[in-house]
Length: 366
Ligand code: ATP
Image 1 (cartoon, protein in one colour):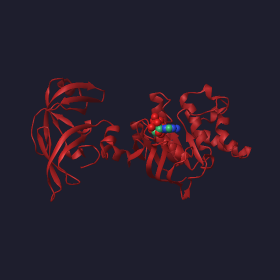
Image 2: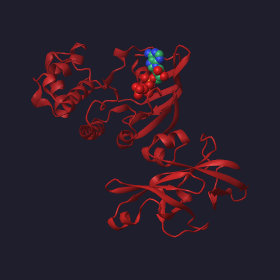
Image 3: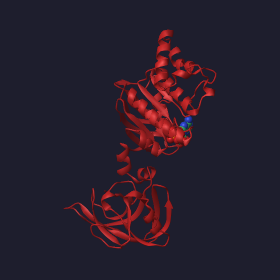
Image 4: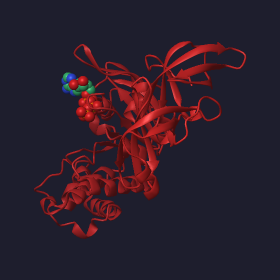
């Protein structure tokens, strides 16, 4: 098991940068996820770590060892891919043994280690099966066993669950998480699925166009996004136009106007002008009585749609000036009946829970 340091790593494809000056320190035993939309550079960074790609700039260390020039097969990495890359003509046992045979390990030792790995993924009883006779989840577990049997310093997984149906994906992600914690292997996991990333990771790096935007624990990324891109990519967020006026340096607060309501908010730095008030649907709430500023500022609005989703209800509300916000509430029979399109309500905006960005969404002001 190793920690991994990535220092100023840049990988070019022609003129374009697949990864742009990435810096990361992944701790021993950490479950670390690279998250971002399609084309943001997740796979490029993973492949560079594995040694399939050579970065043009920057350095990679496994523990204290610089691996910039170390070829793939000498990096001692276990890898699991989306398509499993299992050999269909070999049995489960032979698939898992493959990497060990390539390392010229003795037969008895291979037998012992393969069976241990198969025990871990609960496939020992199916050792002589052909993968084609097995389910998607079982095939994914063969791929996992094959990755861990070599006792890797580092486990790399690239969208390992995306070929599984929704239910199996949930089951397998819990299994992968448990296995990783039990074996305590430093793991770097690639996904574009934000919910999956939040569920399995110790920490997450969010990427956009080859650039790491934020690194943090799942709750930090969710509750304290550093810019509009991250706030928008993780979960659902309302971005409400706001105007900041009169910054008070002594108290480090400013007045902020949203629609017809003015509140006082703490700011990280002096700022005046247009801003973006970013707040999650579950951080907004509805009340039936209108009201202005004060401890519980509210904006008058009109219900547009009510969507019943089982345990919660999503209500979209049109604010004065035409912006629409989404509010999520726990559903309850009486409450659901009260809400309908056209109803006048007021939206409690909970400034203490919001994040405020500058007008371009690049910088956090609160
Ligand atoms: P996805 O989730 O769709 O797999 P990703 O985040 O893994 O996307 P990458 O595959 O790392 O993204 O690609 C990052 C960028 O680099 C993209 O713009 C892609 O088009 C480009 N790219 C990736 N591989 C190559 C290549 N071999 N040659 C040229 N450009 C490439």
